[in-house]
Image (cartoon, rainbow over all chains, first blue to last red; front, side):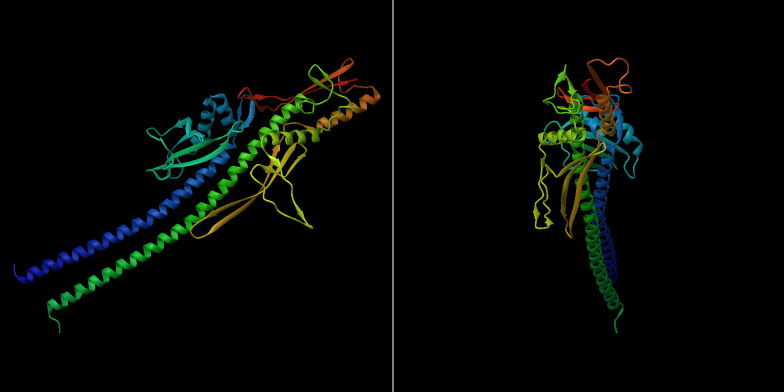
Length: 166
Length: 251
């Protein structure tokens, strides 16, 4: 190969490298920008689900031949140690809401706080191993929302945690 | 005059230059986009959080007041419109209404019973300080309230104002909210006032027709069932109970 040939091959490689690095930078930069925006959107969606838990707790339900709310049913289930009715009514309320936007399914956990002990769970999404909820907010495709209710007749709270698969 | 090679090098130089400029512009644009999206989203998320926190407090207060209203109603009904430990005469365990000694002010007694139960739950009545002619706004602590009112069968507990704050990277959100919790008490105070009025009239005329059926003995026992159940905490369990308003009168 003569000098001209070597020069042309070098120029091609240099040009190709330039274009490749330009495209790489463009892709990386666009990804960085969208990650921040996506995290904000997810946070807003999580807040939205949390706000939806307020009317859920105030939904009127009948049990023990009386008219009460889901929050009272939760307390009744906690003190009486029987969550069957609570789980049944929760499924009746939440199941028709899914799929919701990008979220296809949900789990609900009732957690005793501050002990952080799961005392009841409704699991539609199987295979979630949740030893600790702290980092679940942006863990894979799971989103977590929570609401706290007082136990009224003793110290501490009950946390309702909804995990959505989105 | 440049030869072919010189032209190529010049073009290559321009290409490198434009690529560098392009990357720099893209970087700046991305940083701006990132900042903008973070700032907008940050304020929205903080607003949601502040509102959710305030709503959670309202829900908690509402539930506490509901159970206090239930407890008070059960005690009130068992004692014919009085609290436990009242000084009225009793027939069995039923309170005897006596015009001279034990004639209940139904609404006032219920409100006082609620106040007693609020105290037992750790809520304290706060005083509003008056400075000159202007009322000084004192922000109450979490366990304080300002006023209890009973209007008809609606119990109203005023917890005053609470302020919620959130700081974001670009702003500070302050949300003030007044907490007046309204709870419907499943008891017809108006109907009971009407019964009290009729009993007074009957006492004066000696005619109990329309109030009781059949022969009237020395005492008349009243047992008024409530069609709405309330939840009662008994033996570490929550059970649904119908409050039964019981009292007797001496004819």
